[in-house]
Image (cartoon, rainbow, N blue to C red; front, side, top):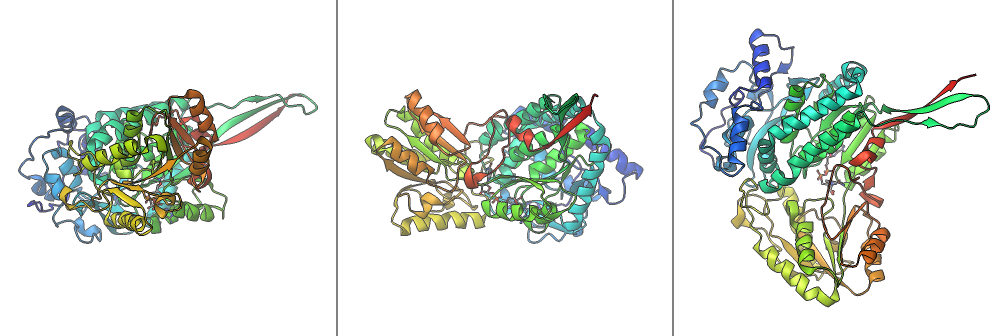
Amino acid sequence: MSSRERGGPVPPAGGTGPEGAAASARGASGGAAAGEVAARGPGTGGAAARTFRAHAGVQAEPAPASPAAGAAAADPRAVPGEAGTAGAGGPGSSRSQTLELPFVAPALRQWLSSPKPLFIGGRWQEPRSGRYLTVTDPATGEPLAEVAEAGEEDVDLAVQAARRALEGSWGKLPPAERGRLLWKLADLVEENAQEFAQLESLNTGKPVTETTMADVPLAVEHFRYFAGWATKWTGETLPVSFPGEYLAYTRREPVGVVGAIVPWNFPLLIASWKLAPALAAGNTVVLKPSELTPLTALRLAELVRQAGFPPGTVNVLPGYGEPAGRALVEHPGVDKISFTGSPAVGRKIMTAAARDFKRVTLELGGKSPNIVFPDADLDSAVAGAMMGIFFNQGEVCCAGSRLFVHKEHFDRVVGAIAERAGRLRQGPGIDPMTQMGPLISRTHMERVLGYIERGRAEGAELLVGGEPNPEAGPGYFVKPTVFLGRDDMTIAREEIFGPVLTVLPFESLDEVVRRANDTPYGLAAGIWTRDVAKAIKVAHRLKAGTVWINGYNLLDATSPWGGFKQSGIGREMGRYALEHYTEVKSVWVNLG
Ligand code: NAD
């Protein structure tokens, strides 16, 4: 346990960033509007950011003796701890010992030590709900940060702010200016990439090597890709046959106010999948991150403000599914919900949206097949299978959790996977040596362990793992687990969302295609073979939104993402995403 007491809010680390400076000036002049509290993030592009870059996430400077608490006491902009109803671990209680690791940059520690308000209408506001929630470090189970929790009134304020921006300053911006702002946001995230990578790793538990190589750069690319689309998403002229002479054409108009609801497994990346196309198409957004992982969304809000987006264009409201998520879905001022999460919640959202026919896109779960044919490059297939299931602790919607291996090489392939799984290094994600981090929460760990128990009870053969890993730390660690199972077992049918692989032998191509498709899900699939024609034929027969041939987990801003069947409705990424963020309008001009 950290010996450092929670000292309450602290001023910006270094205080050198343009946003921090602006906030100070306003606070000093007493000019902040009622209810607003100033943002207190690390100075972007300042000394703190340079420290992150210099140490490349490997070795940060030693933590300074803590002047923070004293400074905070003098900070008139501080959010008072009593403002919230933080429970155990609230302001004043001990914080996660992970924060004391030398890998954690001091500026990040400071940023985390102040409670985070809501971002509404371009300002930092205390929650009308009066509540704060405690964000937990999954590597220790200890408190990491305090974050305002949005209630129904907060959602209403944010939707109103988004509506004002839509009908006002943001709605009037030329497309090129929207693109410029998105590009600027990408630049700012990139300038602070090390910080985002560390923050995401601390909050989710995932290895910082993964957040550095995947989550953050992919989010940056996403903003850039859609920055380009702002000026390129066009309508068309129509060769109508109606008697007379007409000019008929289509235009693409924004849907309006978008409620974006994000899960905990890729918080920054999935937020970018929604924000970037929504903004490129001219919508405004109320973003609700998961109650478990709101931190990078809040940091992103600071950069949205710094980039110069008109107030209300993007609003960030951490909160629980109930009441905040539900209030957003049911709000009559929201025109579209873009949701990523579990099928159970997706179903509720679709039902609620039916009342006023809100537009809805859903990115849901999966039970993806990964198929190793006998003519595959087996070393690559083994590496691909490992990546398919153990990347991000298996907390991946497209995890290749059903591995079909041809009987010819079954023992060799499965033996290699079990051996490598047993050697994966587990620990806090923030440690650069960690290969697999903790699961997100105790509840989720117990759910995953429940599936493992079910696998055993139904007669699956446990090849490796199958239990918690207390040696990795006091948090929510489950060992990488491999079962030899059957298609009808629960572990081969339900989404576990953890590091649990079920290997299944097969004999023929038709057989494996049939079995691979025998699932209510249809998000992704993998194929391993050297026979190109076979690979393509199988790819066309698999019922999945994405098929990878001789690869796994390949994602790019240009490539559409979404599910067949119960894996969802609609597509994110690529130009296909823009379809869901615009309405098509036909305009007829009588030339007679
Ligand atoms: P979840 O459905 O529990 O929560 C997702 C989000 O919905 C959270 O922000 C939560 O607060 C909110 N929410 C909960 N109840 C709500 C309600 N009644 N109304 C409105 N919002 C509500 O999912 P999770 O546990 O955070 O994430 C895991 C699930 O997400 C898995 O099923 C996984 O497959 C899926 N997922 C899918 C994709 C994809 O691209 N298809 C990507 C990542 C995760």
